[in-house]
Each structure stands twice: as C-alpha cells, then as structure tokens.
Image 1 (cartoon, one colour):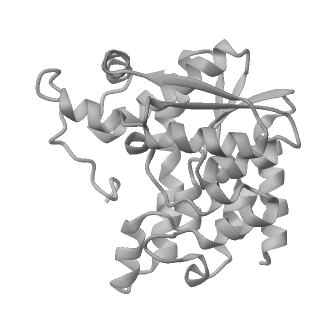
Image 2 (tube, rainbow, N blue to C red):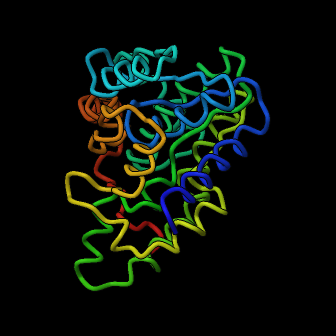
Amino acid sequence: MQTKELTEILEKAVARSAENEKEVAIAFSGGLDSATIAKIGMQKFGAKLIAMGVEGSHDLAAAREAADELGLPLYEVVLDERKILQDYEVCYKMMPGTLTDVELMVGAYECCKKAQELGCKIILFGSGAEENFIGYQKYYNRFSKGEDLQKILNKEIETLPSRDLKRTCAIAGHFGIKAAFPFMDKELVKEVASVPVEKRMGTVEMKKPLLRKIAKSLGVPKCAYERPKKAMQYGSDIHRILLRHAKAKNIEFWDARAPFVYE
C-alpha cells in the first residue's frame, strides 16, 4: 500500500465522518493527528478548530502555532482548576471509571460543549490513530518481546468503541451532537493493517512514521507533523491539576488503568 493511496483513503474517511455537514468541529491539539484531520477537513467543509487546556499548557501553545500555519481560526477553551474539578465530577457521575478514563472525558466535555455553542452538529476526534499507526509505547514493548503485534492491534481497534470512544460519544450526546472518528473508518483500518507493522514503527521519540509521511504529503505544518505525541490529559494540564486535588476530591488516582484493559 503506497502513501498516496493511504492518503486518498484518509481523505475519504474524513469526508465520510463529516456527513456532508457544512461546518464541522475538530478537537484540536496542534499535534499530528488533529492537524492532519484539520488539513483535510479545511478543503471539504468549514473546519472549526477547538483547543482546550490550562493557560500556558503545551496543547494550547501548540494549537495556536499550528492553527496559525494552517490559516484557520482557533476557538479556545481556557481551563482553570475550578472548571476542571467541576467537569470531573459531572463526567464521573455520567460514567464512572479510573482517573485515566474520566480525565479523557473532561477534555472531550469541554470540546463538545464549545462545538455545540458554535452550532456544529459533528465533532471529529483523532482517536484510533495510535492503534492504527502504532503510537503507544506499550505496542513497542510487546513487539520487542516477540509477540504478534498486529493481532494485538486488531484487538485494540475492535474493543476501542466499547472503551474510550463510548465515553466520548456519551459526552457528545450529552450536548446533542455527534462525535466521529476518521481514523476508525473501516476502509482505512483495513488498508493500514495491510502495511507490515515494521513499516509503521518509528523511534521512541518519533512514533507513527507512516502517518507523519502522509501528513507531510498533505501539507500539514511541520510544527505538527514533527511534534512528538503528548497525551491530551498531559498536554492540557488536566492530569496535573486532578492529581493535585486527588485526595481532597476523593479522585481514585490509585486505580491506574491497565495498558490492555480487556486482558
């Protein structure tokens, strides 16, 4: 499978996810995944980039830089401790889980809320990029042990809709909108899986080389396609603030989520 063919399939995936809406929100961190969706989306619909995080956080700074290079307006949600703690309580009541489960919901909560305010019916998330393009360190760890990584990735992708995506969709539904995930498009998943895992693996610092190559070919800003992965809860500073208040707010931070929760 050539990069050009995968690029065309990803373009179709983004278009399908938008469902012919004229204006579509994109949860935007300024990183590889969201910037790639944004670059494709801006040619197909009115892309509304939504970034959230604590002022001074990695994600807000990265989103501002990437949005500026894309030439797209950025709709910011600047979080503070009070808002993060309030959102955590709302999300936990909606769907209890580990700290990792719920802090991811907090980020989605603020993005979906802003999307609704902007009048968008659909918001796109980059979920699925790590599983398809091998972006998590846990995959490298398993591969180094000689395990069948593609079999593991298949299971990750198969169960993702009942895990993180289920939570994101619940949040979107709470605001009367729909969450969509271009990287989970069936055609894209199938074709990416046909690429040997060795060709999808990069260095520890720069994972997902195949997606970076696709992004570069699309004209995604260099600041985005060369940016190392930083998970949303860390890049936005949500995790740091929740840990600080964990004891007082009875946040069950000691229940760490297992790397492979279905095992």
